[in-house]
Length: 279
Length: 334
Image (cartoon, rainbow over all chains, first blue to last red; front, side, top):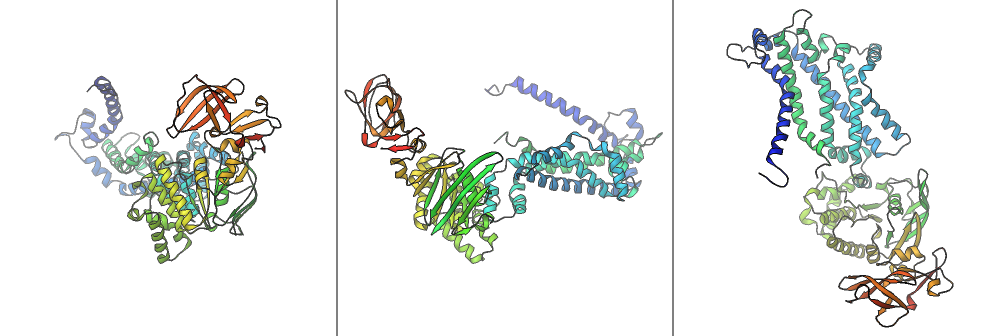
């Protein structure tokens, strides 16, 4: 096993570190999932035990399904996440293309302005955003959330994508121009497919905070018909009594869609992260 | 008829002047090559002709028509790029027909033109493949095919051979020369490689720092360079530039002599030198010499020659092939 590039002790040490990190990262998720399938008493008696024949129970899931409109909440979360994601990717990519492709006065300033959002958290503007939404009558609509999340996701998307767009060959775009393609066709058919890995990276980084967000749904759209999953799960957390079965079951269910979306993007994601490093 | 006419084309990027007023006329069917060191503005000039870049001032006429305000696709040009720039999502056939489809040509005409071009470049077996499945040489042939299909008034080549390896470069060079003969089309070609320029061009435009230094046929540039820049740029190894005073030549500042225009003798000659280094190339031999009187110079001998490093030899210049340059490097006589 001893070769010029690898030695057993070194490989073992590296794997030990990686395994330890994986355990630390996955442990809370693991605890949530196993406890979601246990009785209330079992959750408190032995929180780390696996659900056995005596402690196994799906009471949490039953509560979640019967109480509240969880299907609706899921639907809301889905709509908000997917529409925001679409808007962030579309407008982010378009802005990134403009910044990297066209020379115009104020290009650099515009780039800095758009990147500013990375450094300033959008939550600082919550009061102003709420006033804005009240004034436009968008409170308690999914549109409000979509607009806010689009604004929140754009800076990072533009920042990452414009760097990638710079790497797309000028000759290719020029060949398109000589052949008479419009700038839109050049953008959609030539440039976008080439930056797909970067798009996937941006999609994952954009999607997860949106799905998990509690702040804006609570402030902008707390109505029953517009609740998202994370907000919906809060109904089981009371000031005095918390229905832990239901909370854990709701959280377990909430993990699944993100996991699916992540798996869709992950193949591309890895290519995005390693792009340029290996070729 | 004039295929291309440039009148005082200027280009600046912010405060930097890249082109300082370029005037050039290209006749129908001519093969004109822009050559110069990197950063001399030759690619920018080509992009201005193509319409991919706007000139700061000046006029571009293609086939007698002002095209300054027309987009690239309406100028009647086709361009071949250094990096091939094939559309990765389309097959070879799709790549070649896209331009015509955009222009709204009839299906039958597109098919016919693609077939003709693919036959000329022997692309038939590749038509259904995608660019990723082709080798570099094949990709460049497809790129040339894509240009052919458009039947342009003007072919533009932007360093088309620079990404190919040496053997393919020679093959593709021959291919381009053959196409030019068969189509008798007007071609503008940009390169930094003087061998490509010398072997392909009807006329060479030597550029330096945004100006045209000289326009002429390959042999005119070789035999009568207008100044020291052209003299040094054309020919390899480079022309020797020697101090005229040290050689007792009056009326000039610099004497230029090409390495191939001098003879070497072990016993007698005009100038005593010491051999510093010797390069054997088989067909010819390059000698790097050092003379106490005038410093370093290079000599090129045909065939195989053997000289020990450090040996003493005598150099005699071919007086009829000497070039004399004045204070500003301009040609005086010779």
